Amino acid sequence: QALADAAEFIRAQQKARGCTPRGTAGYCPVVTFGGSYPGFLSAMMRLRYSAVVDAAYSASAPMRFYTQQVQQYDYYSIVSRSAERAVPGCVKAVRTALDEVLAFIRNNTIEESTKKLGFCQPLPAYVAQDKEELISELMLTVEQAFAGLNMANYPPGPDTGMSQTCQSFVKATDLLSPVADLLKSQTPSLGGKAVLRTHADSASCFDLETFRPAGKDGRVRCGDWSGCGSGHDGEMWDYQTCTFEVEHIGLNGKTDMFPPHPWTLDWLKDHCSTRFDARPAPYELQQNWGFSREDLKATATKIIFTNGLNDGWSAGGFLTDVDAASGLITLNMPNGAHHSDLSHDLPSDKDTPDVAAARANATVILRQWLREIKHDSVDVLV
Image 1 (cartoon, rainbow, N blue to C red):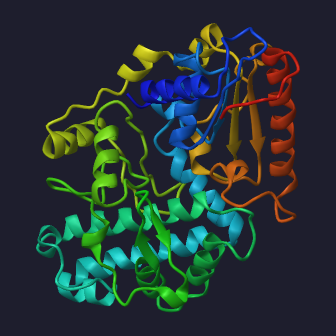
Image 2 (image 1 turned 180 degrees about the vertical axis):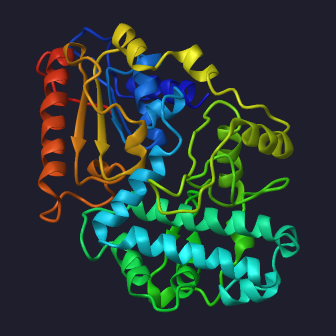
């Protein structure tokens, strides 16, 4: 429905601007842009509404997650490599600290454990009497914290949240303290994902309740193990990952820095049944829309896919050209994080050369496509 609404909006805007049909001198070309899940939607607008959208820019789009072609441990393996790249020794330090946390919880009461780790009291009822539930919620909170730090880890350097957090783990003498500090530095965002507070703004305690998605039996460990987010936004994303947008994201404790916790479809089915009386349909979206590499080669043209290779979501991106002859082009940025090329910050001298080059190359490609579409006109409606 979102795609149909966008197509209707585009047509209305073209009409309001006096644009004439495609192929005529007064035509207004349309290019869609998006990063992350909107990057996926941007590509789908070009695929599904090619009569409306002339080209698409799809940054950090999880295409292969939704074709079910990603191995479950790939995501957090990249997140962990990003952490180790930020601060050597980070992976070992985080793994050691989390092992210590698990041992502390199992050897102490829930009240003692949560007070030591800085949880706000009283605890939500569902974890107050269940250590395994507490551990699951705690570990997913830590995992999604690092997932968020990974997405924002650009430009790489000592000032990023990832670098600062890794430094706190590497330098810690009390192994529980960096975990408690990380929890208290988290704050739910309106967009769903947790974001990092500055040290000065850290909360006095970690309020688990505020991180839960809304609705029946909401859990931090939701359908998306990179984190669904809180409140109604988190509930909606949890539902999407319980239906068509199934994501295989698990942990093995070997290629990543977190305690082993394999993802299974049976777990997801149980979760989704309890939450929404829904049943995951992992292959249905791909079967209906056809956006695998092979399908795109046969049916699509003029889509730019970009990937920050320092981003966990690049595990689900197209890392090579799908079909350069048809304009299905990939631009990779070794230093890029999550859609760093579409950053909220304007291009500056802080950008790494690879991200600057990707933007420049994309600009050349888009200009060429627009010339082909508009016969040397550059009036673009985005």
